[in-house]
Image (cartoon, rainbow, N blue to C red; front, side, top):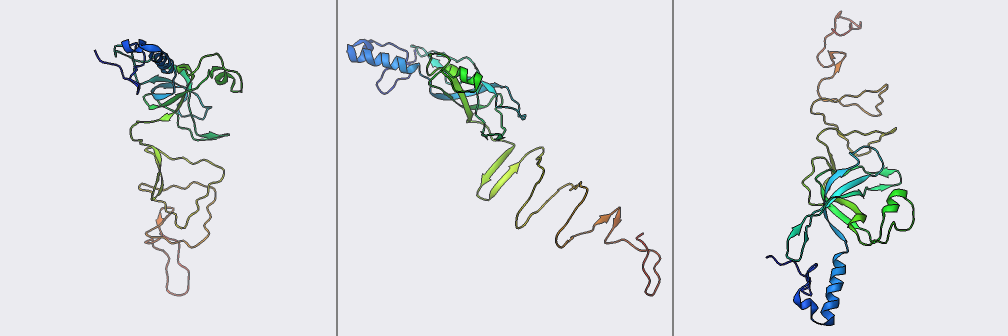
Length: 237
């Protein structure tokens, strides 16, 4: 049968070997390692569900499954069960936040508190631990993704600048939006539409190509009622 993994002292976690009973040192070392094996620190987990789906809402909870199996004394694996109601991290300060909620199937890092955090999760206030348990899977916190596929919607920081990419739409909402730069370009491969009660331009207007005004070409339109002399032309036809 397969042998379970060993630490630097050659003492496997969760297995009593013959040499573990040889002398007081080996006895104590075995007990210490068994106690350490019950302490949860950090591990990779898979997201099974999330209470939020990207909406504007308070930070929620996720259900996670640890991905590193447990091993018995003979090296037989036992998969972990799902851990429910685990708080997850959101980049937020006060009421300012970036909303990127975890999704089912994500792989990420979870850490486990040294004391019971169940009461704090409920009250959101400082208080005593909910019980005497320590370093338990029950007191997990999900910190964020790792080992996931390339995103299709993202904010990218690179040597050439910052890129915001979305396969659907980018919406900016605010009472006042300003674009400040030496050169600002708007390129619409299909069309550009401006809907506003008033439109003000401070500066020279340079137009490349034709301009349509109420269905009439500014560049190629003709005038009727033209007579020689100093009279005015008619309206465009």
